[in-house]
Length: 191
Image (tube, rainbow, N blue to C red):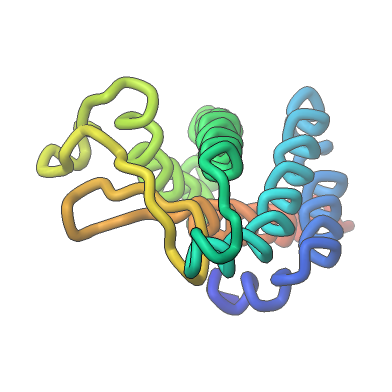
């Protein structure tokens, strides 16, 4: 299932949170139990941001008439940035665990590759947000992730004048990767 399909399947924040919890309890717990509480917090924050976005998007379309305040915008952007920072660390750790796994099949698996690609997606936003420099993998990026609003997916950061990455894209991709990981673990641990 591609991320757009999964995003529609988990569009409702409550259903989405159930999807996160299934992956966390069935997959992450088996491989990295110390990450479960943190990832559950990120899942809750993701769903809370999506709930807030349901009202913010309409406010962004008519900010003066809707009474959108700069504090609402600042809070949403700040929580979105913090979510990216936290989720990046989860992705980085999962990728490291897969790369350092004792089984070479795991190291060379499609899943390990996919998580590595996901890490690159996160780096494109995370490095400019945290270090104010372009990621080494994307030297033509500006090095400053300028926040903006995508009317479908809300919080977004422009990494070049014409390209942006939304928090929701990253969230959907992480959730999809966790589902893939969950399927892989279930296959590996089912007698």
